[in-house]
Image 1 (cartoon, rainbow, N blue to C red):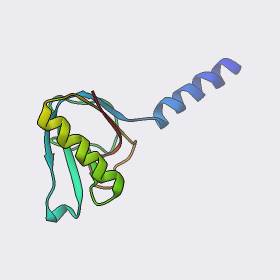
Image 2 (tube, rainbow, N blue to C red):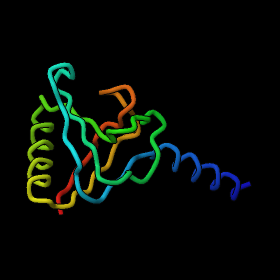
Image 3 (cartoon, rainbow, N blue to C red):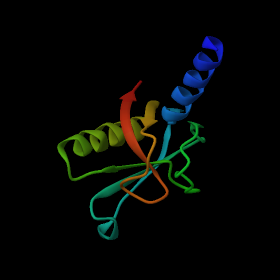
Length: 110
């Protein structure tokens, strides 16, 4: 019985931590007035992982560029794009900012 409980708990934990993870170069950063401050990130390769709501064929991540945190994300992404540096990006497990694009959760530049 304990083994079954541990297996079920592990499976639930894996499902509840769904995310997209990407390590590599940025292909494109996209925004415009129709997106009301949202900034979309396209990666050169596909991220690893699964977020059920993230079904957009072009953009893997989105964030709100109007916040202080979003301004910092944009600065890091623009620096990485201009310098040709790799980034590490992780998403949350939902798409609250745009229907079919995962919300960006954290970002690092290599």
